[in-house]
Image (cartoon, rainbow, N blue to C red; front, side, top):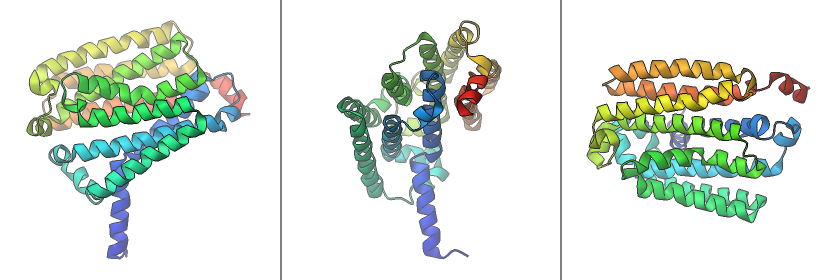
Length: 301
């Protein structure tokens, strides 16, 4: 059996992983590499992409700064999360606020240090990104409409950094980005429905609190149909190989999303919708491998 000290250490490790959203960081790293290998630099040998030191340090910089962003977000939202997610918050509190802030500054410094390996412009880019995350958590998060729009932009920014690195702005990439942005924006709006109780107590101005749940559902319905536009172009106007199966599946899941949304009233139902959108994002990351299976095999072997 584990001793009390070992149990506390284990709980602190789990708490830290929970605070920095270790699962999300892992998915982000995988997504950046898959995007680089199969969308932004499809003609380069896999080995050249995988062992590109600049890309490696860019991914490290992104992971460090995003992890720091989760920490500062957790710091500012601790009281709200105690209402909305009491069990997760109790786990998060095994790490003190002082320790969280110390790790926050260390991760940001590490991110800037990793960026310095790439170029001065990378340092400027990630410095602005770090400030934007803090400013969003400190100020913008309580501002109506801006909270959702800025949160979605911050989430998709790491992929924009990869776009800049490869200087690849083909139209198909921008359409992929539009699809991802809309799904992330929908997820942010569903989170507002899910967290209404804590948001109301802490004075957050979100769409469901200011205008009601029905308007949020109407806006989510509009966003769902808007998401079908980039999906249509990706399936019928661009060559994306077997990845079109993902978009057909995503369309079916979005239809299911609308059905559940229409009848949703309880927090657990909104949590289900949140997880459904998260599932689409994660499956979409790995479905990048389907863009050109033959080329993938030839590049591997």
